[in-house]
Amino acid sequence: MARDGQVAVLPSVERHCAESCERLRDRFLFAVLHDSGCRIGEALGLRHEDIAPAERDISIVRRANDNGARSKSTASWTLPVSGELLRLYADYLHGEYGDLGSDYVFVNRHRLRPALVAAQRGHPDAARRRPDRGGLQTVGPCPGHSPT
Image 1: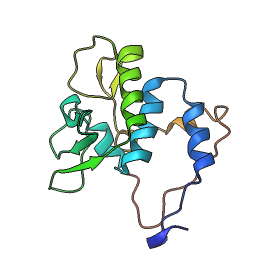
Image 2: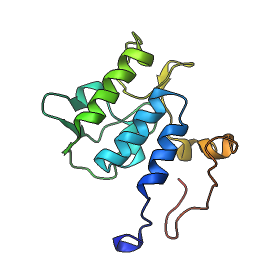
Image 3: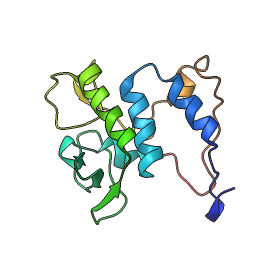
Image 4: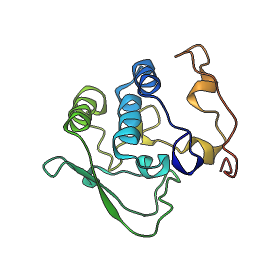
């Protein structure tokens, strides 16, 4: 266990999850979570203006998002990120994102809207939708955390 009772994720598990992603968007999302340490709601609320490649950082800004994603903090802050993450961002923009024209980084291309926060919408997570992909098993919510 990591400090404060949080469960530590082994690098091999993180690598396995990232390699199991079929879309660059999903791989980039995993990478943002791992590299920056931000929460899923913070990541899904990212806008392109929040990513500063020259400074090698991302800004977490609390704002009203169309997808329901939000930061728990009322303050904004900046997180350093790796050059590898920024290269993956460039690959995602050029390989999948294309000319969608959305302010949001993570977009559902089929509906052309920001990617939804799954827990807030009651949708099962990716592992539940596709238990055959990646060999992952689902677990219940962490004690003391609500699924919403």
